[in-house]
Image (cartoon, rainbow, N blue to C red; front, side, top):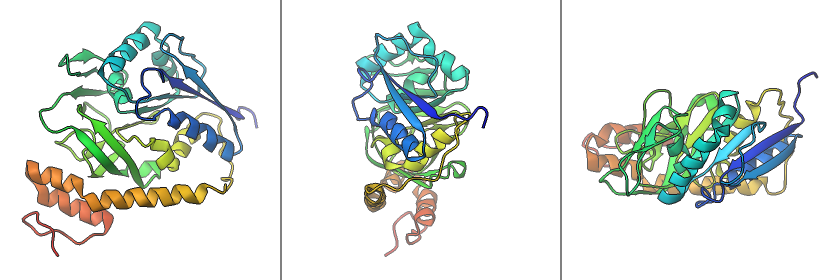
Length: 282
């Protein structure tokens, strides 16, 4: 078929700066899933001193700490290749700090506002509330077909979407910010989240979503592998751990207005409906 793609090229952006939480694994998962679907795959690691190639199909950018985060945004701004690739229609997977620097502005321990790349409609600010650390469970936007998305979060920044839609609704954990029960950002070219894990290893349906959006890519029926069952088991274990924590309910209870949030949580996960005063029924 004319225009059909046989090989997928994945660019891993600045793993020397934004590789703190294992998010580089998302690039490898994309390659593995592509091969399972009968495609060829290539992963190109792009260091902070290297030019960002303009011919990749997917760009993956991960999490990092304040200093590397600022270095990454400076390098990407000088290069300009990532902006050009996204404007040309490439797919993007961005995690935590990678999502923050792509926004309009983000904050660090030393600065309340650092100019971002302006590629996503969001802004990240510091908060006086506790750092968000722990299991993160998200009910993904139905359009993704991903169902429950599992990961772990570790961030002090609080991200506000200025427009657009999130990846999904937070059921356990904090996600973008304490004031909302949402995580990440989603568009027809972007999957962004606070979920480490890495995100695509825990949630391979999202990897297939990204691959299937590449023009000319046709995903063949999935080739079963001996280790596929272990992925399902791992997902079940992590989802169960997040359910047991009920952390989103506890966060919102501390902030007020917990009852309605707790009812949404119970409905989504099939747990007993909480009492009207926000306390769980026995």
